[in-house]
Amino acid sequence: MSAVLKLQNQMDEIISYNPATGEEVGRVGCASAEDVKAAVAKSRDGFLKWKETSFPQRAALVMRAREIILDELDEIARLISDESGKPVAESLSMEIAPVLDLMQYFARHAAKILKSEKINIGLYATLGRTSKIIYKPLGTVGIIPAWNYPFSIPLGEVVMALMAGNAVIVKPSELTPFVGLKIGEIFEKAGLPEDVLQILTGDGRTGAALVDAGIEKIMFTGSVATGRKIAESAAKHLTSVVLELGGKDPMVVFADANLELAAQGAIWGAFCNSGQSCSSVERLYVEESVERKFTDLIVEKTKRLRQDSGDKETTDVAAMSSERQIKIVEDHVESFRREGAKILTGGKRNANFKGAFYEPTVISNATNQMRGMREETFGPTLPIATFKTEREAIDLANDSDFGLTASVWTRDLAKGKRVAEKILAGTVCVNEVLYTHGIGQTPWGGFKQSGYGRTHGKYGLLELVATQHIHVNRVLLTSNAWWLPYSPLAVETFRGFARYFASGSLRQTMKLAPRLLKRIKELRGK
Ligand code: NDP
Figure 1 (cartoon, rainbow, N blue to C red):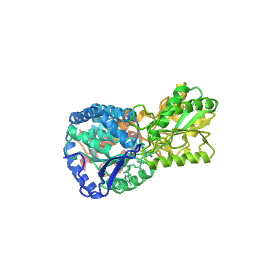
Figure 2 (cartoon, rainbow, N blue to C red):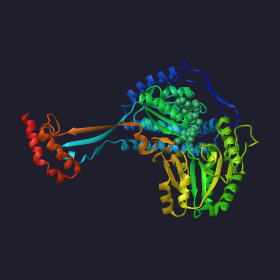
Figure 3 (tube, rainbow, N blue to C red):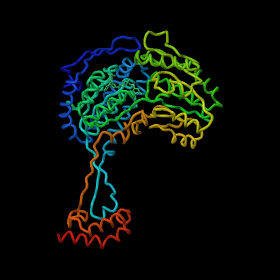
Figure 4 (cartoon, rainbow, N blue to C red):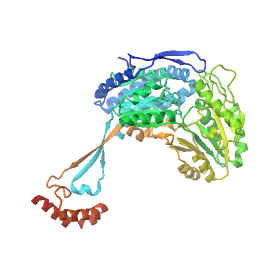
């Protein structure tokens, strides 16, 4: 049986197109609500098997899947590029390499991260009690990713969910179903037992049915609007949700930064994946005194970028993922123009291509009042604004509904860290940009409208388990002083609890001993 669910009641067909050429990549079924129900029912059986596996067994499976990816490296890179439009260089560097690293990390470390832990329970220990935490798999985890990193985002979450002992259902974006199916195929080849991972191709309706299926967890990556709908629908079943939503990420460049490096970082941060990363640089704030010099550097470097189809190894910037997305970019660039910003380079579709190619675009004289500085663009645009003081830089960076990532550029590391800690975002880098989703050990997730919950790192793994507290009383001599029946002596003892025991101090608590002994005697006499 394939990890790819055979749809019984599929709705319409989904046609996947290569956005660079407009050619059809292939067709898949669109899973209906009944298909989702059937998948969830199978997933329950898959979970019963998988949760009994040991960490070494899970790790071996993940490492086999990793080998299969390595065997098919170029084929997978090409598929990602064909379906999403991105350069094959980025399929390798931004999707496959980071997720291979994540796979080995969680295969090797999940057992340690999820090891049971003793809890220090303070003075309760003197009463002969112990507490520990154990982590249990949740059940079925539903993964609903966006189309922009169609391989690495869902695959990373699949690996973490499997390492934690869960069964998984993935609903890939309708723009990239074949990359989603590839993930299922890899695990099937690796020998994952039946029904533990299922890939359900479909559209928003399929995703909605999965959220409404009463499973244990939803890991969602996508827009704020859909995230909100998902949170509402999941609330009906009290399904817990991680929401990885949009960004409008600021880059703050101080005059003392290495401007050459910062300019290179800015164009990569703004234009890689045609600007379609949740952590793309979407607002650049540069200190006024170096604005001219820095902007010139950026424009010069941007003009040198080679835009071509993603399958060529020399392509820097390729196609966007869809016509819908390119229209948003056109709309934002037009609104920058109308509101008085200057388009220094780009600012239009690339006429050399028929597909969804938008030229890398640098915009100066931007201000936070402009629409393009407030709404997520998700395209190859780099709007630049200026600041005069550190305080102003922080205020401008924080003046946003979003808070996914940010970066601060300066040679003064103390200043960099000071500013970083004042910016409201899930990740803030100093002299680095965008890439920490690729470090599987570090938490990923946003503040404000960028969502809640975390993927990756220890905190991401803990999203995929139930935390259970085991409390043991080893002293079985007497009933507790706080049990029934109550009496004036009981109430006096409880006053002592409040005054002494709750202080956390053993010395203070000793004052309670005579009263406590009397109370225990009283209880024994009952
Ligand atoms: P969408 O919100 O449109 O879609 C995301 C996923 O949800 C897709 O699989 C989509 O299916 C599915 N979906 C759509 N409607 C529903 C519904 N009602 N219930 C359940 N699932 C549904 O986002 P995009 O795909 O356009 O992705 C772009 C967004 O993702 C940007 O805002 C970007 O910032 C964000 N993002 C955030 C990341 C983060 O880590 N914070 C990382 C990457 C992207 P279908 O595609 O088939 O319609």
